[in-house]
Length: 271
Image 1 (cartoon, one colour):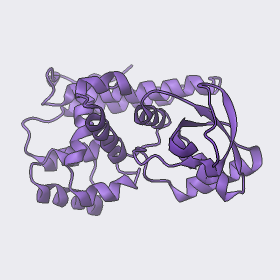
Image 2 (spheres, rainbow, N blue to C red):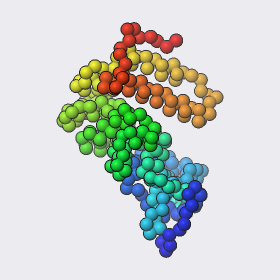
Image 3 (cartoon, one colour):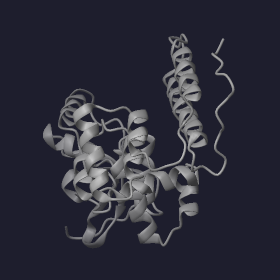
Image 4 (spheres, rainbow, N blue to C red):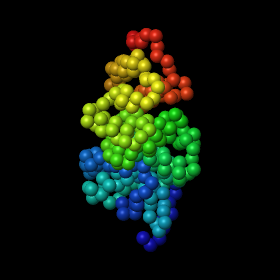
C-alpha cells in the first residue's frame, strides 16, 4: 500500500479483501465449516448483503471489527471487493456486542471476550453491564467459565452445542479435577443441566422442581403460539424475550442469588 486512505465514519466503501487484517482480540475464534460454506454459497448467489465494520490501522491496513466470516466466505467464491463501514470507539466492545446480537459466540468465547475486555480497559463487572446489556449476576456467572480447565475451554470454544448453563454448573466445582470428572460424565452420559447441578453437589439447596416444571410448561405454551403472521423482527424479539425470561428466572432460582426464590407450596400450571 502506498498511502493511507482517508475514511469517514458511517460512509459506505467498496474495499479489496486484501486490505483487511484480523483483529487478534476478536472474541470469535471458531467458524463452523459447514456454516461458512453455506455463507459462501449465499454470497455467490446474492452477494454480500451486510457491510464489514472496520477501523483504520497502521500502514494503511484495515482492522476487522465485525465481519471476518463474511470476508473468509467471500474469498472462497472469488469475491475480491466487499462493502465496508468505518466505525470508531472500542473495537473489542463493538465486535463483542455485534457477535452477541447475532448469537455467534460460544459460551467460552463470550467469557474470554468479557475477561479480555476487563483487562484491556480496566473494567469492573458493573462496567460491563452497560456494554453487553446483561445483569451483573449473569456477567459474573459467564466469567466463571474462565475458571474451567484449559482442556474443557479448548474443546468448548469450538463447540456451540454445549449449553452455557451446563458449563456454569461445572465451573462451580472448586477443584480442577472435579470439573474435568463432571465434564467427562456430561459427555459420556449426556447429563442434563439439572443432573449436572445435582452432581455438582457442593452448593446448598437446588432449584425447586416445581419452578423447573413451571418454566417448561410456560415455554411449551408460548412455543405453540401462531406466529405465522409475525415479521422476522417480531419473531426475533419474541425468541430473545423468551430466552431473557428463562435467564432471569434461573437467576432467581439460584441459591447463591442475593434474592433466591423459595419453593412454592404447590406448583401451578399455566392455564
